[in-house]
Image (cartoon, rainbow, N blue to C red; front, side):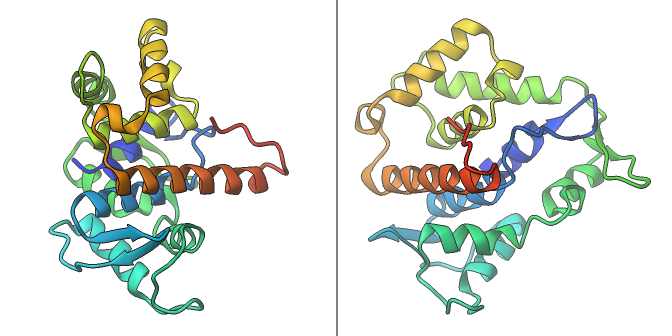
Length: 217
């Protein structure tokens, strides 16, 4: 499962059928960047996002690649993080119209109860907790956490959602993990640069969106 899929599903407020308000909308498009990097589709050298392989082998990543390659108002790239996130924001749209949600509706995991406003509910009530259980196994109590799930944890923290899914001792462990030097937990240099650039841009954008009061951590 892609990072983008996990974040899309975990950012849904299961009881209300809509995304959590604390999860900044920019988190979703940035997750595509990490997925594309891990699959070898983009590079991140000299702080620029550049497509190096168009074949994603994933229907969810084909459109992000096209957007990063589109000339638009900034040319075809390579793009700095600010421009890359703006381009990928074009792929999000109304939340229940995204390709990921449509896929999970078709698979029967989600049901669409949209009338006037978008509403998505889980047919499997424990789906999110099962997903969290898998993430715990790859990130907590291990020497080298899975890089993809590490990024999911960081995005959940930035969206203030850790308390929704984890106990207080687990949150303490997660926060300690996120503060560790990347080299000590097996995250290599280019990935570190990508993650740090994403976080910096998310903080900058959220500060703008919230009128100067940034609450992203």
